[in-house]
Image 1: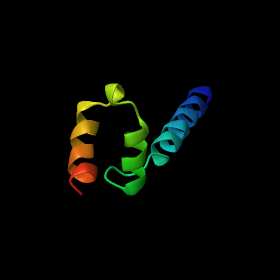
Image 2: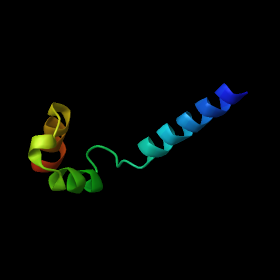
Image 3: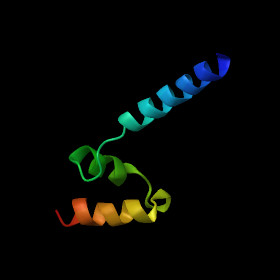
Image 4: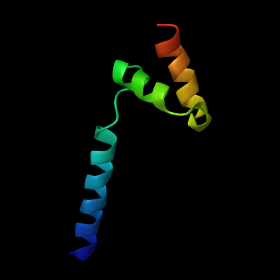
Length: 56
């Protein structure tokens, strides 16, 4: 019973964390990435930013 409770708590936190991030390519996402230092961008973020925000 204790393991199930721990798993549910972890799952709930994971779902909460992923639900808060804006959709890639949205206006909110573009703004949040633009505020992030470019040295901290991942390759996927840089490619998506170029595709959805820079050339848009």
